[in-house]
Length: 90
Image (cartoon, rainbow, N blue to C red):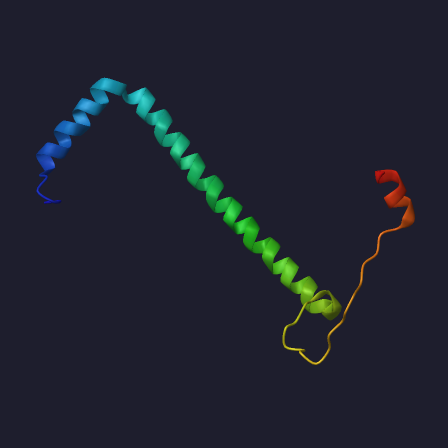
């Protein structure tokens, strides 16, 4: 028993659903659902491959990484606009 629902009640509900929608419609819904699950699994697998490639590239080029462990060096940067940009905006 599943929460007070017997197998006979489930079979009756299944029979009513088949009568309402028909087997062709249910087959199409099942196929669409299966295709969606396959697409999701494929996307997750491709995402893992991309993350692995990015991790490998970051390990090859240590300058591309930002590490918060090196607290000894601080860089102060002052940004200034060019005069040309200020004249164009006026």
